[in-house]
Image (cartoon, rainbow, N blue to C red):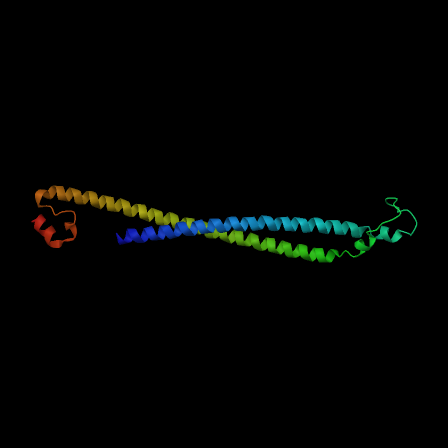
Amino acid sequence: AAQASTLQQRVAMGQAETAQLQQSLLTLRERFKAQQSVVSDKQKLLAQEQRIQSLEAHRHALQPGEACPLCGAHDHPAIAAYTALQPSRTQHALAQAEQALAALQAQEAQQQADLAATHTRLNVLQAQQQQLAQATQADATSWQALCAALGDNAPGPAGWHDAHALATAHA
């Protein structure tokens, strides 16, 4: 009975740990998706900044009062903003976002491994629990057969642990 109780407690703890790991994994996956979005946004921003910077030579060719050689406009009010762009900052931000994404991937892999190990332990415990239940049932069946063989001299259900009652019944 004590062994069954211990196994039951260990199974319950394993089930609780499994549920906690599964919830943690779901949360981690949500964080991963959000970080993927951040990385994607940084990649797009960097591409735009690099494109704008690649037009640097064309911006220098603009002359006051003359039409733009690319678009024909006489005024480009965002030129000052374009010269203030610093793709190196965006590259650094992208690198940090990618590192955070890689860290989340590593955490997910570790939690997947932890969950698999917990499932394995839980399966072993449940198999032990089933073996114990089968052994208990076999013992109960044997006990009933022995009691039936003893007939009226058989001890009651609580008498199996009383050595004197068993000796009297067997004699």
